[in-house]
Image (cartoon, rainbow, N blue to C red; front, side, top):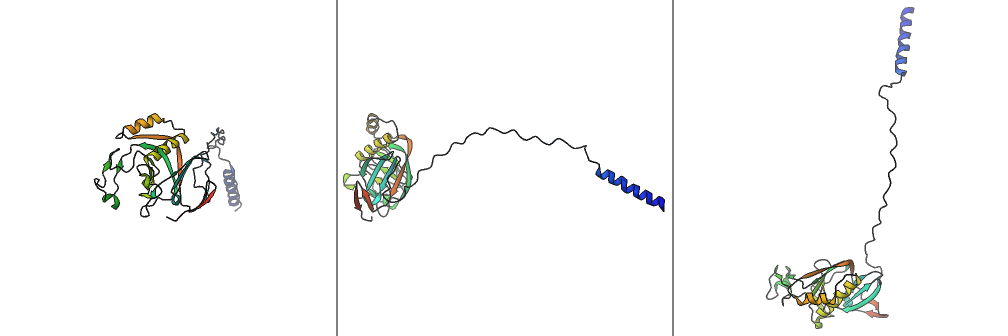
Length: 240
């Protein structure tokens, strides 16, 4: 009996020693902390242009502002008004939209693709889907177009009698003389090099299309404001 008890106590003692012995066979030094890496400063993105808040807001940047019921388009450079133009606007069936668009290029002697619209299908001498060549008498875009996001444009080709009226299908319409003047001022406001001589050369070659990329993208803000202050005077325009 005593011998059995002795053997039992000895077994417990040996098992405890084995369990308490640390296992050093697989141990390794703790990993060293990674060296700090130099950080590269991240350039802050320029804020995107936004619609100016409130009525009669005056831009502080370079921007084109069209007030639809006033039939008026203003071009600003660094917050200064360069020039105002009386324009034609879209008909009630094809109105000029409101919101913020952008101009990135000026296209001289543009072609015109006849849209799949009822009004276009009723036109003589053209067919839906047809591309009408630059300089053609059937091309309604005139000398110059400035895309502002399809299907809307600022373009020439309008008769003087159409200015200040419903004159287009969702576009800003100008006479050829107006749109040439506007294009030159837009180029100047964006530091885009294009001379009068070069423009005259482009327009002389009526069937050759030329695209000039603007050095800066210009916000084009399309507003609908019937009560405005212009040139220091209050104006109330008819709801069109």
